[in-house]
Amino acid sequence: MISPTIMLRRPSSVYRYFAPAVVLVMVVYWYILTPARIHIATGALTSTAAQLQHMHVANYHTPGRIGQIPVGLQHTKGKPHKGHKTQRPHPIEELVGKAQTTFNNLLARQTYSLNGTAAAYRERRGRHPPPGFDLWYKYAADNNVLIVEDFWDQIYDDLQPFWGVATQQLRHDTYNFHMKISVRNGSASTTSDWFWTQTWLEMIRKVEHMLPDMDIPLNAMDEPRMVVPWEDMREVLDRAGAASGTRDTRTKETNNVVTGYQQLDPDLSKDVAEPQDIVWETAGPYWDILRRGCDPESATRQVPSVTDFHEAPPIRHNYAQAHMQRGFVVNTTLASDICHQPDIQTLNGIFIEPLTISTTKKLFPLFGGSKLSVNNEILLPAPAYWRNDARFSIAADSRANSIAWEDKVNGSFWRGVATGGRNRPDNWRGFQRHRFVAMNNATALAAQGRSHNIDKSNELAAWVAASSDCAFVDLFCDTDSKVASACPYVDPHYAVAKGRPLSEQVVYKFLPDIDGNSFSGRYLAFLRSGSVPVKATVWREWHDQRLVAWKHYVPMDTRFSDWFGIMEFFVGRGGRHGRDDLAKRIAEDGGAWAERVLRKEDMQVYVLRLLLEYARVLDEKRERMGWVDDLQ
Ligand SMILES: *[C@@H]1O[C@H](CO)[C@@H](O)[C@H](O)[C@H]1NC(C)=O
Ligand SMILES: *[C@@H]1O[C@H](CO)[C@@H](O)[C@H](O)[C@H]1NC(C)=O
Ligand SMILES: *[C@@H]1O[C@H](CO)[C@@H](O)[C@H](O)[C@H]1NC(C)=O
Ligand SMILES: *[C@@H]1O[C@H](CO)[C@@H](O)[C@H](O)[C@H]1NC(C)=O
Ligand SMILES: *[C@@H]1O[C@H](CO)[C@@H](O)[C@H](O)[C@H]1NC(C)=O
Image (cartoon, rainbow, N blue to C red):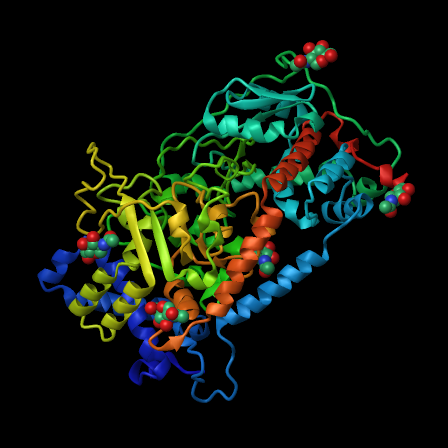
């Protein structure tokens, strides 16, 4: 093992490339994003440099962690480390190989018959499938849906807590929620004309004839709204686990199984329990609301909340270690979990200052399109994926759909609005889109490098200029100005570029996908585009279990410290060739998979499964309900 101190004294070929990049990344965060130009002018450069050096050591070169350096530049192809006889493959090659295995294992669990699917269900869920499972299966088969029981894991994570809540309470809470879709007598309706609600109604209407009666409360805000304290959730889950007997009775018992659903009155006000009002918190800090959803032992509960977002946020790679492997994301579920990474409270607009806060501690069924790891919403496919808006999809007849990989531009492209939350003069520096655009600004990189005497900064800047084109199309400024470009506090740092339709964006091979106010609605279009989505997100969505990172898309840490490493690996740098072949394969595999398992039909089948399960959990007789025709 090469010791960090030796590396610092005697730069190896590895370090020669790696160090300037690390320092430059730090410079971007520390300098471009700090209000500290004035420091430099007044001679505080040395202390800034000392701080950089400090962070450099603290965050990148902790002894024993050299193999997990967060920028992938050290693994130069064809240049074995001194003293190592055989070279370990580049970390991305390892991750791509591992993803193929994960994907093969997933496919190996595919089922092809009702009986086989029911057996896989009992095996994975530990209870009988819900009544109507045969209809669900037929609907899925008729729609040529690929069935792997894992694909519906999210449903069970989302619904499990409600087995610990009394059914009468659930019926009450869902019936009384102001924004809802109701199903009665096989027909879905709503009193709301909000376009998201209307979109969800359209989705649910596709399967309404197979649905039992239920009320479906909807969250029509961008932000998720429910964070049950971890301690309360623990109790609810204990009750839920205890509720329905042993696994054996739940999967083997065939006598006394109730095979139909309750019917609900159109008006439930007689049936329901005492009103229990939902209290909405409308004031932040939002991080304090969110972190109550974490285990008290977790880093996020232990590390104090940040209240001052004035300075550029420090990047703490030690908190990313758990979900990274040799500098790149290895576990995307964990990467989007906020409980082990308290530093991300300063790295994403949703944590710094969301547009709207309206959150409750109370557990009741609330459906939404995306959520954070600590939220308790039930996920539906987001309206953005259902509607054919130009903002979120490319028309089927567009020529953009048929551009060959070889004809695409060898580089990355991003355009978007400076969303993420409410950016202000004293908090914008940590916003994810601001950070990402700044990192890809070659002009700024070159200027900062020069002023810090960083060797090779021009090379990095030139490479970024050649391989990346990222800009805001609207600064989403916190002023009354109606002119998009007039935003005094960020104008010196960002230019406003012309927007480009998705059909022009997909001309580029690499499409970074950066969260906005919540999840990024263009993700599905990116997956289908024939280009490679490079996705950094803290959001959970309905489709997470059916997409395999490094097989169908490239995952990126929310700190973006792997970004240059990812691009260097795929496009090449400084005369070294990139793995264009692997990028092409990911683009093709992701596109084909999206056509196979992310179609509207797949969403419909997800919604039908979800709502059958949901109706069971609302049902008085839920513990005895099931579909057991295959066992009789
Ligand atoms: C459902 O059908 C029953 C009987 O056909 C009828 O009494 C009831 O009003 C209907 N409910 C709704 C919500 O239409
Ligand atoms: C990813 O992390 C989660 C949460 O810690 C864990 O349950 C899961 O097994 C991990 N997945 C893999 C593939 O290691
Ligand atoms: C890049 O940074 C410079 C300042 O360093 C700024 O003037 C320019 O507008 C930025 N470009 C973009 C595309 O944001
Ligand atoms: C792609 O772009 C990068 C960066 O400009 C360059 O180093 C590489 O040689 C290019 N690859 C191809 C195949 O053109
Ligand atoms: C499914 O199970 C039922 C009941 O055991 C049986 O009659 C039927 O033949 C099975 N179907 C298939 C396709 O295995």
